[in-house]
Length: 221
Length: 175
Image (cartoon, rainbow over all chains, first blue to last red; front, side, top):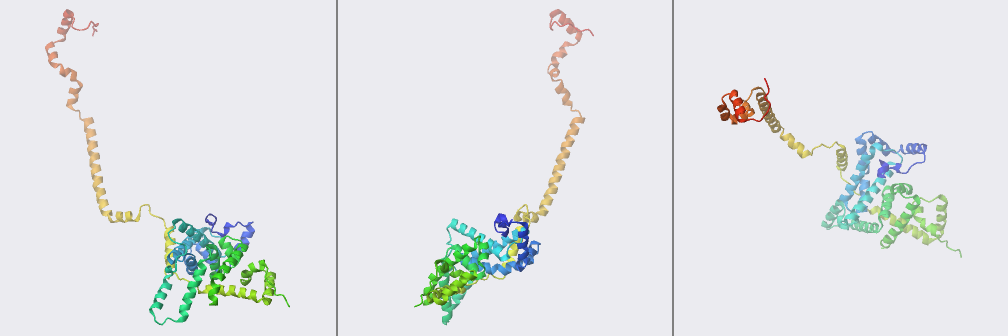
């Protein structure tokens, strides 16, 4: 099932059964792999723990890719539904998070294609569609005549950084988010995005050089 | 005067990987050496690091407490066996169950009566002869009955035949 979805770490064929066993043994130490194996046995509580553990992390990444919280929540749910559907054929041949982010990458790619076909909603929307929590905070702040300067600066900085992030292409942005938010190594990012480690290095180097160009003037000011 | 070392093209493209600790030890040492001697390179690296740190300002979102429950419910619902008829129809059938049962009983009675009537008709028509059947079978005779009454006897017909030749010249069969 993984292979057909191209979501599974099994998609990269290993040279022999021994190599596969070795990989499995290594990844069995991952507590999330253990939860996924329990989910495979029909333990829905274990699956619930995985959802609870990753839902906000995935949501933040999808939000910064789409800049639309409702759409991002839909994609998060789609990722977990795919995992649930694939649980019976699950084989631990990668860290759970790496496998999950690979599925997330596929889901994001599909969403990009769908949005591209519809041409209704720009992939990155303007700051008007900021997350609900942020909007609420803004309204509260604006109503107050005593806006702390630090809070104002923080909000402005946040907007500047988001704008800078939006200048990156989709792949650069995903690589940056996986590295920054998830602390993933180049190798794991490569596995999640179906890229070589060298390609990830190059992708991140260009992305961060772009970010530096965008953000450096604000650092000086 | 000591010359300030500069980064090679490869080293420049590796600066980010250097900051991320993703460079092999030897390559990282080479960049370290340049950094200690070149303020410009130190500035570049510092800017890369500081702009990277600015990404910490990006908001992290929360999906709400019930997201896990909703997701589990959707996942389970997807796998639940789907009814052959839509739920609305199933509900309608459930509500109308009493009426459907009564209607079924009435229909069964009507069908039983019709079957009985058909069977009765078939049996009676086969076992009890209809008087009109004889009439139909002898229709030709009945139609010419007045003529036959004038004939009176077979002997008369034989004599008539001999004299007038009323009938075809067929050999008379002897009894």
